[in-house]
Image 1 (cartoon, rainbow, N blue to C red):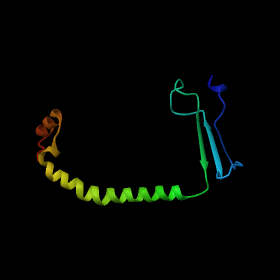
Image 2 (tube, one colour):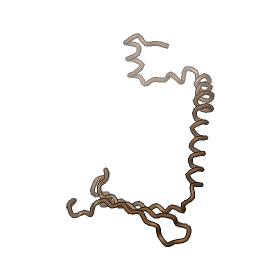
Image 3 (cartoon, rainbow, N blue to C red):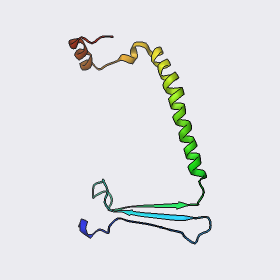
Image 4 (cartoon, helix red, strand yellow):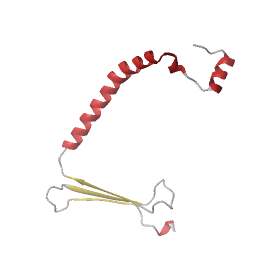
Length: 106
């Protein structure tokens, strides 16, 4: 029955609707999910022609990466590890036995 399915199709056009600069439609028939879940996936994107959302998303992503790099990884993680002490080095029993057998220690 897979040969009866329509093929994947992608189309884009400029609709005669005020405020919409471009419309994009994709119909996917081949995907990684098992055949019994869905026969096809459809995706529709409407673009108003402005880049404000993209700029806002880029600025937010940049700020998030900078906060993660400088605040969380350089300040908070080492501080929490220092406060937690030996709890940071917790290991399951089999791994502790393996460490003891092979001479690993703090």
